[in-house]
Amino acid sequence: MKAWHWLRENAVMIVGLLAIAYMLIPILVIAVFSFNDPSGRFNFEWVGFTTEYWTKPFAITELTDSLLLSIRLAFFTAIGATILGTLLAIALVRYQFMGRRAANLLIVIPMATPEVVIGAALLSFFLTLNVFELGFQTLLIAHIMFSVSFVVIVVRSRLIGFDRRLEEAASDLGANAFTTFRKVTLPLIAPGVLSAAFLAFALSIDDFVISNFNSGSEVTFPLYIFGANQRGIPVQVNVIATMLFAVTVIAMLAVIIQQKRAEKAAAMRPEEVANKPAISLPV
Amino acid sequence: MTFRQRTIPYWLLAPGLLWLVIFFVVPMYYMGELSLKTGTVQTGYELTWAFSNYSDAISQYSEQFIRSFWYAGVATFFCLLIGYPLAYAIAFKAGRWKNLMLFAVVAPFFTTYLIRTIAWKTILDDSSPVVSVIEFLGLAPQGHVLATSGAVIAGLTYNFLPFMVLPLFTALERLDRRLLEAGKDLYASTFQTFWRITLPLTMPGIIAGILLTFIPAAGDYVNATFLGGTSQSMIGNVIQSKYLVVTDYSEAAALSFTLMAIILVALLVYIKFAGTSALMGEEEEAR
Image (cartoon, rainbow over all chains, first blue to last red; front, side, top):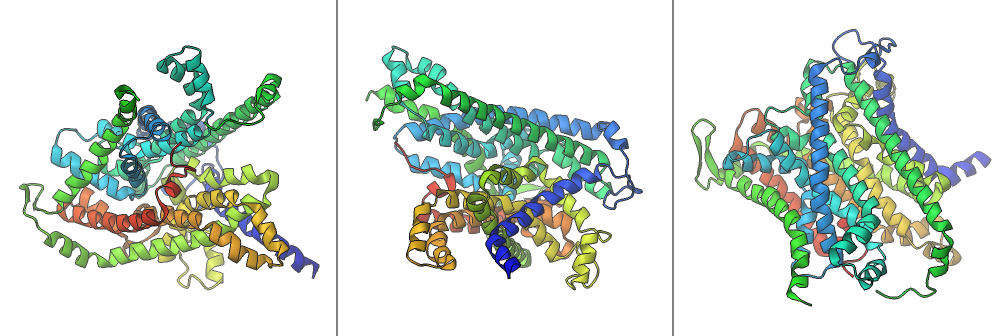
């Protein structure tokens, strides 16, 4: 009876933890199989433990080249998409203008379009137009295109929680619009802009479908894996995937800890608490 | 307001919107045009308003179309079934573990999509203990799971679960808890409180989650390629191979235009009812 009661009380949490396990098991499998010593070309069956592949993760030239290409592509994608997306977010949050619904729609629809359709449309465009040569430039165009909408969403959520009196104070003190933007607005939305840039980087480095259509003869990291699937994926892929996972997790934790510290420091500053008006002005 | 001030938003919008128009809207137009052309790669294509491309493509691949929507629908259903309790547990029960659990939900995004899917190939390999258990339960009579509909649906469910959980979590987190207390005070049972208060109020999150799961799942071909066999191929597989392997461009364009049209109609119906705000995750339209 007691056990039944406990089960009823915690049923939601148990289902939740099972779901979490479902999400994490494949990641664990990837990491475990990076220590496998497969007998043939295929790394699907556990044979024996070895650290051999961890000692030479970059031994396969094509794999390493594809990884470097993906990193380069993701880097430029992050820069391009962050600039375009941040400007869009500022316009959408700060200004009233004609055609705002249409602008919103144009930003939402690419996110709600299946990747295969985006890839196919871009390839149709590049083939018919014959101006762009399929390769790095078409990949970059495509990646910036599908990342922009995500950047807009991240940056706008930061802008919505923004105290505009700080900008007014700057302009009251004689700063022009550009100086206000550079010295006040940008530092305040910087965390949002930075996480948007990280998101664009992650979306780009992980993209397979759209790249599959528009890569020409270039081979990104996901395209290498796709190609290697038929002839057997080398264990190094698991090693590199585990490394990427570890690096991302550590970077994320560092950012979170840093933010927590900054928030704590800000909360402890006495003059800020003292200066906070009892009634906040409607802006 | 001066003229200069009034034009500022357009200057801010111009680069981003131009990029989206030139590299999203215009390509859609070109794909539409290509779908009405006839010809081959060797002889070149000519616009002949060949609407027969559509009827041919749809009648020839209706099976894959139906299968795609069926798989995506079942996967979305399972995502909701798994995702709602998970989002609920994170929002209401997790306490100080909340951030850790949220982190676990997005953790799969830190490994490449293809590698995650291939990990399922390992998990569902004939030699895997998981398959032995499934076989013992009588769910895999032939002793293998790979190259079945079940494997593809499991892969789709796994890969798109975070897209379901995140909007659900946001909706549950925003829920005014005083309403739940009011329900309790008025002697509603736990189930009644859930059915009459929590569920209706989180409906926008549910719909957003369904769209964000169903749309990418319907167009996916990665799961069907890695986890399915030839009789599990989805419409994405057909479009991919027509574009990139057999270069039958006009019929491929007709197929992907049809897929886009079906999804766009669903989306516009949704936006008509809910506006763009639920998809954008914004709290207010403008200040």
